[in-house]
Length: 301
Ligand code: KIV
Figure (cartoon, rainbow, N blue to C red):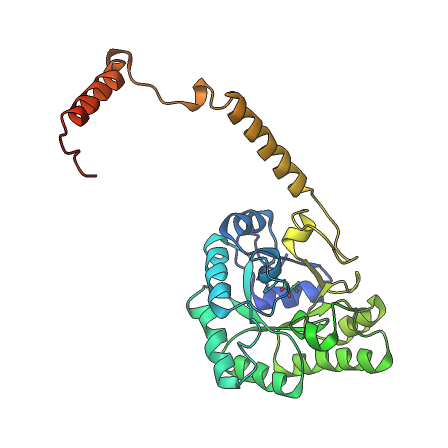
Protein backbone atom coordinates (compact mmCIF):
# COMPACT_ATOMS: atom_id res chain seq x y z
CA UNK A 1 0.00 0.00 0.00
CA UNK A 2 1.21 3.54 -0.65
CA UNK A 3 0.71 4.56 3.01
CA UNK A 4 0.57 2.81 6.39
CA UNK A 5 -2.94 2.09 7.71
CA UNK A 6 -2.40 4.50 10.63
CA UNK A 7 -1.69 7.61 8.49
CA UNK A 8 -4.42 10.02 7.48
CA UNK A 9 -6.03 9.49 4.08
CA UNK A 10 -5.04 12.23 1.61
CA UNK A 11 -6.08 13.25 -1.90
CA UNK A 12 -2.79 11.76 -3.22
CA UNK A 13 -3.55 8.46 -1.51
CA UNK A 14 -6.97 8.31 -3.21
CA UNK A 15 -5.35 9.03 -6.59
CA UNK A 16 -2.89 6.23 -5.91
CA UNK A 17 -5.74 3.82 -5.09
CA UNK A 18 -7.34 4.65 -8.45
CA UNK A 19 -4.04 4.09 -10.28
CA UNK A 20 -3.56 0.75 -8.54
CA UNK A 21 -7.20 -0.19 -9.23
CA UNK A 22 -7.89 -0.57 -5.50
CA UNK A 23 -11.38 0.39 -4.39
CA UNK A 24 -12.07 3.51 -2.30
CA UNK A 25 -14.45 2.91 0.60
CA UNK A 26 -16.86 5.64 1.67
CA UNK A 27 -19.82 5.77 4.06
CA UNK A 28 -21.78 8.66 5.46
CA UNK A 29 -21.44 9.47 9.16
CA UNK A 30 -23.22 12.06 11.27
CA UNK A 31 -22.19 11.46 14.88
CA UNK A 32 -19.19 10.70 17.09
CA UNK A 33 -19.80 7.03 18.03
CA UNK A 34 -20.61 5.90 14.49
CA UNK A 35 -17.68 7.83 13.02
CA UNK A 36 -15.34 6.29 15.59
CA UNK A 37 -16.44 2.75 14.68
CA UNK A 38 -16.23 3.38 10.92
CA UNK A 39 -12.80 4.98 11.24
CA UNK A 40 -11.52 2.06 13.30
CA UNK A 41 -12.84 -0.32 10.59
CA UNK A 42 -10.42 1.36 8.16
CA UNK A 43 -12.86 3.26 5.93
CA UNK A 44 -11.17 5.77 3.55
CA UNK A 45 -13.72 8.61 3.61
CA UNK A 46 -16.35 9.67 6.14
CA UNK A 47 -18.89 11.78 4.26
CA UNK A 48 -21.04 13.99 6.44
CA UNK A 49 -23.77 14.03 3.80
CA UNK A 50 -26.72 16.38 3.85
CA UNK A 51 -28.69 13.10 3.84
CA UNK A 52 -28.36 13.97 7.54
CA UNK A 53 -31.61 15.88 7.04
CA UNK A 54 -33.55 12.79 6.02
CA UNK A 55 -31.97 9.97 8.01
CA UNK A 56 -31.13 11.76 11.27
CA UNK A 57 -33.20 14.95 11.50
CA UNK A 58 -36.46 13.59 10.03
CA UNK A 59 -36.90 16.10 7.17
CA UNK A 60 -38.81 15.03 4.06
CA UNK A 61 -35.80 15.81 1.81
CA UNK A 62 -32.39 17.47 2.09
CA UNK A 63 -33.53 21.01 1.21
CA UNK A 64 -34.13 22.31 4.79
CA UNK A 65 -30.65 21.33 6.06
CA UNK A 66 -28.71 24.37 7.30
CA UNK A 67 -25.01 25.23 7.50
CA UNK A 68 -25.28 25.23 11.31
CA UNK A 69 -26.63 21.66 11.32
CA UNK A 70 -23.89 20.52 8.93
CA UNK A 71 -21.11 22.18 10.95
CA UNK A 72 -22.45 20.74 14.23
CA UNK A 73 -22.45 17.16 12.89
CA UNK A 74 -19.18 17.51 10.97
CA UNK A 75 -17.47 18.60 14.21
CA UNK A 76 -18.65 15.43 15.94
CA UNK A 77 -17.42 13.23 13.08
CA UNK A 78 -14.06 15.01 12.83
CA UNK A 79 -13.50 14.60 16.59
CA UNK A 80 -13.89 10.83 16.19
CA UNK A 81 -11.68 10.11 13.19
CA UNK A 82 -8.04 9.24 13.35
CA UNK A 83 -7.34 8.09 9.78
CA UNK A 84 -10.26 8.64 7.39
CA UNK A 85 -10.71 11.75 5.27
CA UNK A 86 -13.70 13.80 6.50
CA UNK A 87 -15.80 15.50 3.82
CA UNK A 88 -18.59 17.94 4.69
CA UNK A 89 -21.53 18.28 2.31
CA UNK A 90 -22.52 21.82 1.31
CA UNK A 91 -26.26 22.14 2.08
CA UNK A 92 -28.84 23.67 -0.24
CA UNK A 93 -28.39 27.43 -0.72
CA UNK A 94 -24.99 27.54 0.97
CA UNK A 95 -23.16 27.83 -2.38
CA UNK A 96 -25.75 28.96 -4.92
CA UNK A 97 -25.69 32.73 -4.55
CA UNK A 98 -22.07 33.69 -5.23
CA UNK A 99 -18.55 32.22 -5.33
CA UNK A 100 -17.60 34.45 -2.37
CA UNK A 101 -20.41 33.10 -0.20
CA UNK A 102 -19.59 29.55 -1.30
CA UNK A 103 -15.94 30.00 -0.28
CA UNK A 104 -16.94 31.51 3.09
CA UNK A 105 -19.31 28.63 3.85
CA UNK A 106 -16.98 25.91 2.55
CA UNK A 107 -14.09 27.29 4.58
CA UNK A 108 -16.19 26.91 7.75
CA UNK A 109 -16.08 23.13 7.24
CA UNK A 110 -12.28 23.27 7.32
CA UNK A 111 -11.70 26.07 9.86
CA UNK A 112 -14.47 25.37 12.39
CA UNK A 113 -15.49 21.75 11.88
CA UNK A 114 -12.16 20.03 11.17
CA UNK A 115 -13.13 18.60 7.77
CA UNK A 116 -10.56 17.90 5.05
CA UNK A 117 -12.74 19.00 2.15
CA UNK A 118 -16.28 19.56 0.97
CA UNK A 119 -18.73 18.04 -1.49
CA UNK A 120 -21.19 19.97 -3.58
CA UNK A 121 -23.88 18.94 -6.02
CA UNK A 122 -24.15 19.86 -9.70
CA UNK A 123 -22.00 20.87 -12.64
CA UNK A 124 -23.77 23.83 -14.24
CA UNK A 125 -21.58 26.63 -15.62
CA UNK A 126 -22.09 28.70 -12.46
CA UNK A 127 -21.40 25.66 -10.26
CA UNK A 128 -18.10 25.03 -12.07
CA UNK A 129 -17.00 28.62 -11.39
CA UNK A 130 -17.77 28.00 -7.73
CA UNK A 131 -15.67 24.84 -7.75
CA UNK A 132 -12.79 26.83 -9.29
CA UNK A 133 -13.14 29.52 -6.60
CA UNK A 134 -13.09 26.88 -3.84
CA UNK A 135 -10.03 25.15 -5.27
CA UNK A 136 -8.35 28.57 -5.59
CA UNK A 137 -9.07 29.03 -1.87
CA UNK A 138 -7.23 25.72 -1.17
CA UNK A 139 -10.43 23.82 -0.40
CA UNK A 140 -10.49 20.22 -1.71
CA UNK A 141 -13.76 19.67 -3.60
CA UNK A 142 -15.62 16.45 -4.28
CA UNK A 143 -18.15 16.89 -7.11
CA UNK A 144 -21.52 15.14 -7.41
CA UNK A 145 -23.45 14.46 -10.64
CA UNK A 146 -26.26 12.18 -11.77
CA UNK A 147 -29.09 12.25 -9.28
CA UNK A 148 -28.45 15.32 -7.14
CA UNK A 149 -31.04 15.20 -4.32
CA UNK A 150 -31.01 19.00 -3.82
CA UNK A 151 -32.57 19.22 -7.33
CA UNK A 152 -35.44 16.91 -6.30
CA UNK A 153 -38.06 19.61 -7.00
CA UNK A 154 -36.61 20.29 -10.48
CA UNK A 155 -36.12 16.62 -11.40
CA UNK A 156 -39.54 15.69 -9.98
CA UNK A 157 -38.41 12.87 -7.67
CA UNK A 158 -35.48 10.60 -6.89
CA UNK A 159 -35.06 9.22 -10.42
CA UNK A 160 -32.21 7.43 -12.22
CA UNK A 161 -30.30 9.96 -14.37
CA UNK A 162 -28.55 9.42 -17.71
CA UNK A 163 -30.86 6.86 -19.29
CA UNK A 164 -31.36 8.89 -22.51
CA UNK A 165 -28.69 10.47 -24.70
CA UNK A 166 -29.28 14.05 -23.59
CA UNK A 167 -29.12 13.21 -19.88
CA UNK A 168 -26.19 10.81 -20.31
CA UNK A 169 -24.25 13.53 -22.13
CA UNK A 170 -25.02 16.01 -19.34
CA UNK A 171 -23.78 13.58 -16.68
CA UNK A 172 -20.64 12.72 -18.70
CA UNK A 173 -19.80 16.36 -19.47
CA UNK A 174 -20.53 17.36 -15.88
CA UNK A 175 -18.04 14.83 -14.50
CA UNK A 176 -15.36 15.88 -17.02
CA UNK A 177 -15.89 19.58 -16.32
CA UNK A 178 -15.70 19.03 -12.57
CA UNK A 179 -12.34 17.35 -13.06
CA UNK A 180 -11.20 20.29 -15.20
CA UNK A 181 -12.41 22.76 -12.54
CA UNK A 182 -10.12 21.03 -10.00
CA UNK A 183 -12.37 18.57 -8.12
CA UNK A 184 -10.34 15.72 -6.56
CA UNK A 185 -13.14 13.13 -6.93
CA UNK A 186 -16.70 12.95 -8.18
CA UNK A 187 -19.75 11.13 -6.85
CA UNK A 188 -21.90 9.44 -9.52
CA UNK A 189 -25.37 8.88 -8.07
CA UNK A 190 -28.12 6.74 -9.63
CA UNK A 191 -26.73 6.46 -13.14
CA UNK A 192 -26.64 3.38 -15.38
CA UNK A 193 -23.65 1.11 -14.75
CA UNK A 194 -22.55 1.35 -18.40
CA UNK A 195 -22.35 5.15 -18.25
CA UNK A 196 -20.48 5.12 -14.90
CA UNK A 197 -17.98 2.66 -16.38
CA UNK A 198 -17.15 4.96 -19.32
CA UNK A 199 -16.88 8.03 -17.05
CA UNK A 200 -14.59 6.15 -14.65
CA UNK A 201 -12.34 5.01 -17.51
CA UNK A 202 -12.14 8.58 -18.86
CA UNK A 203 -11.52 10.60 -15.67
CA UNK A 204 -8.12 10.83 -14.00
CA UNK A 205 -9.77 11.60 -10.66
CA UNK A 206 -11.61 8.83 -8.75
CA UNK A 207 -15.33 8.27 -9.22
CA UNK A 208 -17.34 7.27 -6.14
CA UNK A 209 -20.53 5.45 -7.07
CA UNK A 210 -23.87 5.19 -5.32
CA UNK A 211 -26.31 3.31 -7.49
CA UNK A 212 -23.77 3.51 -10.33
CA UNK A 213 -22.54 -0.08 -10.52
CA UNK A 214 -19.30 -1.86 -9.68
CA UNK A 215 -16.90 -0.15 -12.11
CA UNK A 216 -16.57 3.10 -10.16
CA UNK A 217 -13.28 3.64 -8.31
CA UNK A 218 -15.12 3.60 -4.99
CA UNK A 219 -18.53 3.07 -3.43
CA UNK A 220 -20.54 5.14 -0.97
CA UNK A 221 -23.73 4.28 0.93
CA UNK A 222 -25.78 6.08 3.54
CA UNK A 223 -24.70 4.35 6.74
CA UNK A 224 -28.21 4.22 8.25
CA UNK A 225 -29.50 2.46 5.11
CA UNK A 226 -26.81 -0.25 5.05
CA UNK A 227 -27.11 -0.89 8.79
CA UNK A 228 -30.88 -1.37 8.61
CA UNK A 229 -31.79 1.79 10.52
CA UNK A 230 -33.93 3.39 7.81
CA UNK A 231 -37.64 2.63 7.76
CA UNK A 232 -39.74 2.69 4.61
CA UNK A 233 -38.60 2.88 1.00
CA UNK A 234 -34.98 2.12 0.09
CA UNK A 235 -33.51 2.52 -3.41
CA UNK A 236 -32.53 -0.72 -5.19
CA UNK A 237 -28.80 0.00 -4.87
CA UNK A 238 -28.91 -0.26 -1.06
CA UNK A 239 -27.65 -3.53 0.38
CA UNK A 240 -28.49 -4.06 4.04
CA UNK A 241 -25.47 -5.44 5.90
CA UNK A 242 -27.27 -5.48 9.28
CA UNK A 243 -30.76 -5.19 10.76
CA UNK A 244 -30.04 -2.77 13.59
CA UNK A 245 -33.63 -1.51 13.84
CA UNK A 246 -34.74 -5.05 14.74
CA UNK A 247 -31.88 -5.45 17.22
CA UNK A 248 -32.64 -2.09 18.87
CA UNK A 249 -36.38 -2.88 19.11
CA UNK A 250 -35.60 -6.27 20.62
CA UNK A 251 -33.18 -4.78 23.18
CA UNK A 252 -35.55 -1.98 24.18
CA UNK A 253 -38.50 -4.42 24.43
CA UNK A 254 -36.44 -6.59 26.79
CA UNK A 255 -35.49 -3.54 28.88
CA UNK A 256 -39.13 -2.43 29.19
CA UNK A 257 -40.18 -5.90 30.29
CA UNK A 258 -37.34 -6.21 32.85
CA UNK A 259 -38.00 -2.78 34.37
CA UNK A 260 -41.74 -3.45 34.60
CA UNK A 261 -41.17 -6.91 36.11
CA UNK A 262 -38.47 -5.71 38.54
CA UNK A 263 -35.83 -7.91 36.91
CA UNK A 264 -33.54 -4.97 36.16
CA UNK A 265 -31.49 -3.67 37.97
CA UNK A 266 -29.89 -6.73 39.58
CA UNK A 267 -27.44 -6.62 42.48
CA UNK A 268 -24.46 -6.34 40.08
CA UNK A 269 -25.87 -3.02 38.80
CA UNK A 270 -26.22 -1.48 42.29
CA UNK A 271 -23.97 0.50 44.64
CA UNK A 272 -24.02 -0.47 48.36
CA UNK A 273 -23.17 1.23 51.63
CA UNK A 274 -20.29 -0.39 53.50
CA UNK A 275 -21.56 -2.89 56.18
CA UNK A 276 -20.58 -0.52 59.02
CA UNK A 277 -22.68 2.23 57.38
CA UNK A 278 -25.87 0.34 56.47
CA UNK A 279 -27.87 2.36 58.98
CA UNK A 280 -26.89 5.63 57.24
CA UNK A 281 -29.85 5.75 54.84
CA UNK A 282 -32.42 5.27 57.65
CA UNK A 283 -30.61 7.81 59.86
CA UNK A 284 -30.64 10.43 57.07
CA UNK A 285 -34.32 9.77 56.37
CA UNK A 286 -35.23 10.32 60.04
CA UNK A 287 -33.18 13.51 60.20
CA UNK A 288 -34.70 15.00 57.02
CA UNK A 289 -38.29 14.13 58.00
CA UNK A 290 -37.80 15.54 61.52
CA UNK A 291 -36.51 18.82 60.07
CA UNK A 292 -39.46 18.94 57.68
CA UNK A 293 -41.91 18.40 60.54
CA UNK A 294 -40.21 21.20 62.51
CA UNK A 295 -40.35 23.48 59.44
CA UNK A 296 -36.58 23.96 59.17
CA UNK A 297 -35.29 25.25 55.84
CA UNK A 298 -33.52 22.63 53.68
CA UNK A 299 -29.93 23.50 52.70
CA UNK A 300 -29.93 24.72 49.09
CA UNK A 301 -28.06 22.60 46.53
O1 KIV B 1 -25.88 13.38 1.29
C1 KIV B 1 -25.35 12.28 1.07
O2 KIV B 1 -25.30 11.39 1.93
C2 KIV B 1 -24.77 12.06 -0.25
C3 KIV B 1 -24.27 10.69 -0.58
C4 KIV B 1 -25.35 9.72 -0.63
C5 KIV B 1 -23.42 10.69 -1.78
O3 KIV B 1 -24.71 12.96 -1.02
